Length: 342
Length: 234
Image (cartoon, rainbow over all chains, first blue to last red; front, side, top):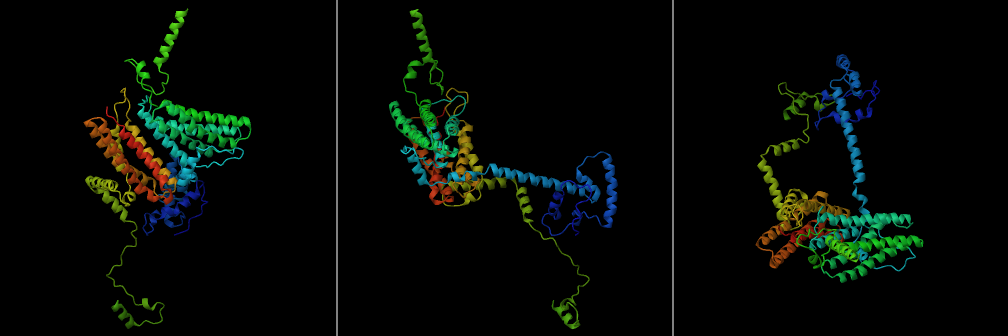
């Protein structure tokens, strides 16, 4: 079999590498050891029969081109070389090459963005470490003049967020919360993940403004472990319905975990104003979130609604903390009182 | 052979380059023919055609038998690799759809819209299974994505049985006794599910991290069993 002819055959501009690259692919079909001479892409054009065929081809192709058949450079190549079925061969090879290039690009992009190995180092923990960090998240540190170490780990925070979702579901169900637009599960997941990711990003942004030494993963980890206190509080108070018990837990457990987060942040920030801004924001958001979770999804104290609602009371809405009947009643009585005095 | 050698020795041609080949003669009336092509990989087209041409009943029965075998493996969890080796997602799909249908509570525009809808249960099961799989892979597991999905889906079978039992019990009445019965049944099935899936999945993890993988599975089945337990028909 002759060596591939010179690639500089006139007018061959389009992807010579593509053509020769696909050479081997095209040679043998399907594993048979016989070289099928008919389909061979030998473009030397040196044999006697090929010359005759070439002339014949050129004549035919001139006629076809006169009809205005548009084509890529492969047609000019086919015309020049004049092999039987060469145009089809070249077309197929070019298509094949384009498919392979496209596939290579797609798999590169996929392996770049959908590679879960990026997250692998953040999940490299042992159970003892997780337990130790859970307990540590309730203990405020004393030393705030020296930057405290924060482990950039995502397993513990993720599991804590899912646990919070499960506890929230339990609370919503026992309090007969009715969600109008949306589902119970969707609301729970949205609330918990929204808090974790949203407040972390916001605090990271503030930390960037206040020049604190903390990375995004560390912030996520810190806030995630801070949810441990929330989990404990909600787990207890969704089952034992005493408001005073809730307030005690809110102050003690919520306060401890907030104090720890605040202390760690303070140790990593310089300057009084910056420390105040960061810690004030974090403390406020964390404590208010616990308050919100309790009251929004908690069993309403029985008796209040019973006295106020008439037979035509609409079903209890999730966000209706201000019962319209109450505020209307208050408004009416106030208006009446003012009218009477005037 | 002996005849050729005999004639070769008899002819005694000397001084040729290839003495052994000098006297090889082929008689005219034996045609030389044969196959140069080496049939490589000619098995697979035949196999494809054979499963393509078989009657539909055979295909369905084969798939059903595979699914049934896996159900048996889940109900009596032993350390076998059949569930992992040839995974399929038919069983999980059937279980998930039946569980979601049974858990569907009320119509969408009723005032007491308290039950989870079909889409909710479906999404919880598949989303939860995907998260657990990703977690176990990130923790260094050797199991593949679809194998893990397969195992988690099949281990929902005890909870589906629990749902059936709960529904039947609720037909009888909705008092405290029925609640206690339902609680016992659901807790037992939840334990069974968790143990079954742990038996399959925990082996693929490094030994000191088993607890880290078991906890999300525990949470996942806990949420499903909680949905089953708190189900009240309209």
